[in-house]
Amino acid sequence: MPALQSRKTSVRTRLRQLTTMCCVLAALGGVLGLAGGHVIHGALMVLGAVLLVPGTIWGRRRQPHLKLVYSSSAQAPEASASKGSRKVA
Image (cartoon, rainbow, N blue to C red; front, side, top):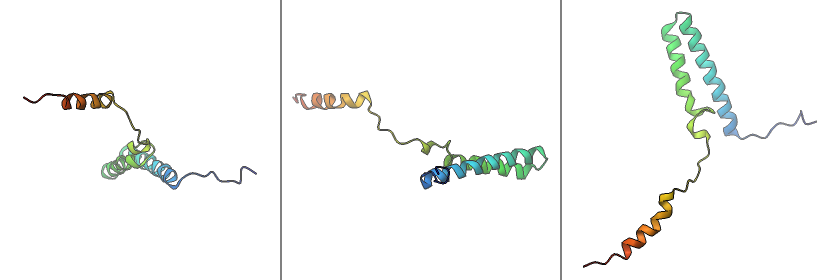
């Protein structure tokens, strides 16, 4: 009975999916409103869709934070060692 078992997704993932659906519906409603001659209502719906984008699956916060190691950080101990070995006159 795998069809009866629900998938275990996090609440955050489900909220992002719901926000994505609302964003798409708002954008679609805005475009239809603009096409139908309702300029202000259509523009407000498109603006609402744009404001929802950061909370969707396309938002910046979707990607997990990666710990990047830069090559300059590997050179940092050498730079600090050279500072300490400098002779003061």
